[in-house]
Length: 134
Image (cartoon, rainbow, N blue to C red; front, side, top):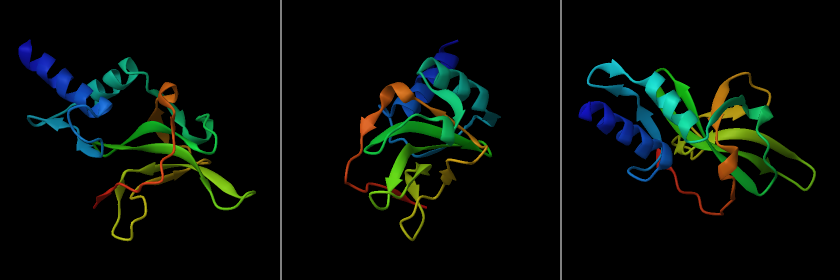
């Protein structure tokens, strides 16, 4: 029982970013895939499955989100990228970056892929570009 509670605490630490930096996290523990537990805990923490296009966020703000691919949880943000006063696009961009400095995972507003977003934790965009290289 203690082992399960320790695993839940570790997963919660990833989701909240309080124990580790939120980036890319392998969802395997002791040889077992724990994606189902991760999804359950996302729900407990206010994350909802939705398409990027359905996430309500305005320019200047970002919404924390995770995307799950092949047993790995990728943390990132859903936000509006502003090119000009009239041209913008909404997307999910992972905090993990590629060698060029672009988001390793980009999911556009018209994608059918599901992200798990916490619209209750909307934050103002910052100008810094902290990222982890692949």
